[in-house]
Length: 84
Image (cartoon, rainbow, N blue to C red; front, side):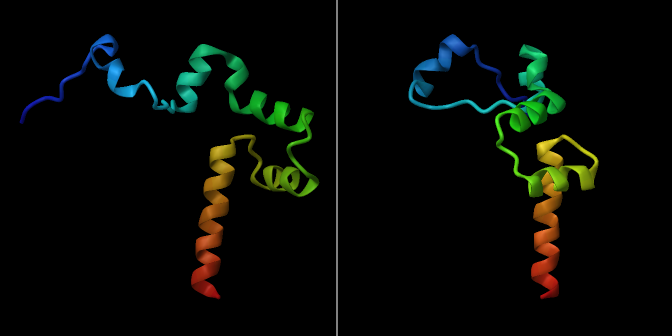
């Protein structure tokens, strides 16, 4: 089996000039701790991005991890669709 080639950015960047790169939360946290789940949650609360219902959902899951909460809400929706 042949290994995948890893290119240098300068060799391929011309193919991505109008594109976007999405990095996972781990990469963001490596840049700054302000991107960790607790910091993001506190910032969202501070800016009033979370209403009382949203805050109660996070409390119910005992988590400040948006990905975890959203994944669980999606799974709950899918189960409800099957049961209804």
